[in-house]
Length: 173
Image (cartoon, rainbow, N blue to C red; front, side, top):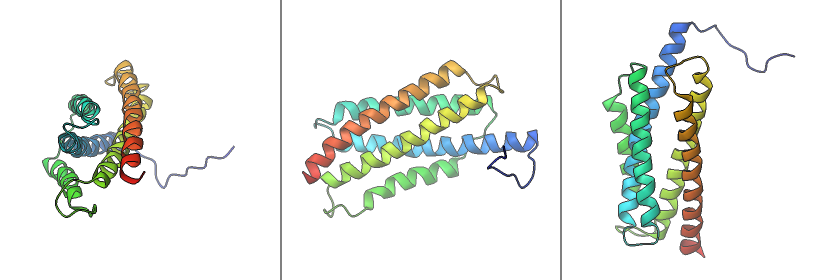
């Protein structure tokens, strides 16, 4: 059986370690943007039926970011303030999208933000799954903790799915 994946050159252990550090650094920056988006979505929805779940999600996303920062320290990853700033700026610029209203939060804003949060949580789930694969060869990674983080990401996706369904019905139904 032939492999469907071909490599242009073999990677060395040093190359692989650099790639893991870059991967972790990029995810840590994205986590900062995701947390910013989650906070904004929660604050924009205070006093609504969405608020309790969005508050819980924001707390969970902060905890996940902290878990990722712990892993970054184990791999001697220097986080990038510039990358983090770009991710947060991207989350902030998302507020400038056309949403049918010039200044105020609209039902469309909620739908789009919940979709963006879902995409971020799906990416985070893939991170935990990727690190689980690496846990077999790198004992710095805690298999039980990563499994728990992956389960929690799936739970977050289910909450976001329900909130999104509710938001779509309110906005368009």
